[in-house]
Length: 369
Ligand code: 2NL
Image (cartoon, rainbow, N blue to C red; front, side, top):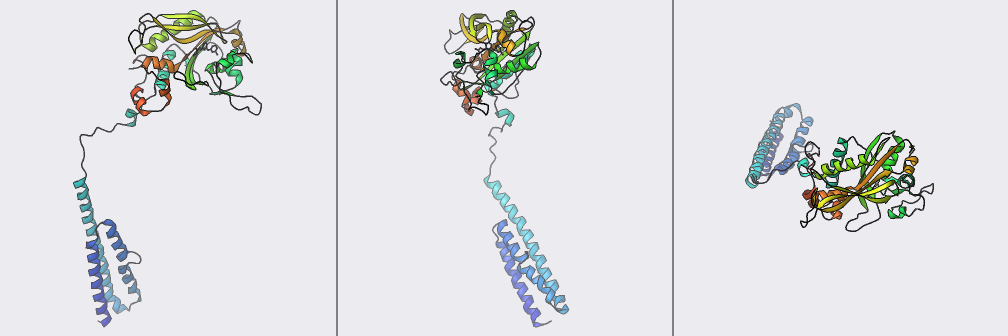
């Protein structure tokens, strides 16, 4: 053995001593990892020693090889041991500080906490009732042209009835035409008459827009309109449909209805409909009983000009239509007093007035069960 060997061997022992105390002194896993990299990493002290074997004579290597490899194995062993000790200690510390509060309520699934907006609920209810009578649902664009929103519906150009609607106009397009935000859902029915052959039975629920805003009006609101076109369709059918609808929707056995003469450009004759109610109890309104009346919709026989404008022959076909405000009937049925709250997206309001998403309205299951 040469002197160099002895020196090197004691240097190895010194290094092992230093590394052992660094490993045992590492406060946590991150600190231990630093020590590991400084010893066994690519440029670590032990790795450098291993690299130096290559430059040694075979005799030297015979002695130093096992010494350095032994060092590496013992250091790696110490690190593994220390790491598992630190892991155990960290877990014990967590267990000592963290507690499980078994009195906390169970966290509900999204389908349990989410709520269906009353307008969406009422749309589902309406659809279920009219679907049961053989109606399908038609939809159309919110941005309409003048023809579908006004002209086809027998509002002549410059007619004052156009002003009644407080229309939102879009800037003129390349053709100079100003599109509008539809002021009612009637353009959907116009499109249906243009594309379908009678008999037609559709309802058109959806968003509508008028430049109007106060306690009972919002610039965006919802309507549902219904349309029946058939050779023998008459007001008797309309009255039956509306009566069945009111009984189902307000969930009462019977309800008196009052048809008053009115005017709409698109129907002739035109009527407004009131339903029987009782308002003698403060803050409460009951349908199907009492001696008060409440207006809920407008209706009439489709005007022959409208049929013609939509490509139907008024001598062959006739029909009736009605329209009502969804927001309003939702408020009446579910007792909300402020329309504006509908569109404020306040989750506290929604969690109070909203509906559970999996409780689907059906006629058999009870609409609002
Ligand atoms: C109301 C009155 C109504 C209609 C809407 C209609 C549609 C076509 C042809 C004829 Cl395509 N009529 N719809 C008819 C009468 C009244 O709505 O007060 N709505 C809130």
